[in-house]
Amino acid sequence: MIASVGANVVRTMSRNLSTSVVRSHGAEKIVGRGQWPKPGSNLPFSITNRYRLTLYYMLFTGSAFGLPFYFWTQKQ
Image 1: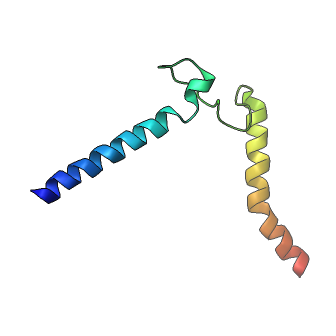
Image 2: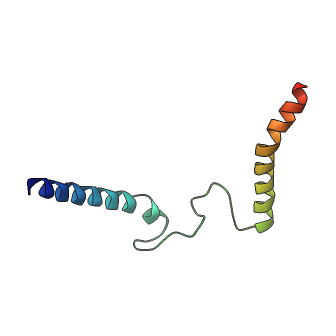
Image 3: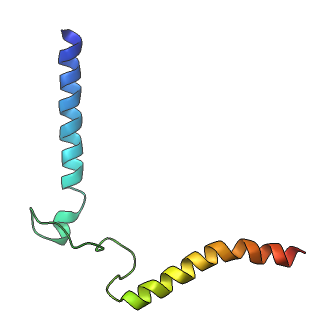
């Protein structure tokens, strides 16, 4: 009985903490209370231009996959 009461207290405290963390995350600073920010508003790059986003994606992934092969060929 005491263990179940303690578990309920811990569960309630963790729920209240997680709710307050989510509420104070910064979404209220971007838009009004009770509204959600636009998708992509927290990204460090713009997603409005489809072609620029595609170019950035190709450069980023191309460098990540291509650099090990480049270094391997330069080593030989």
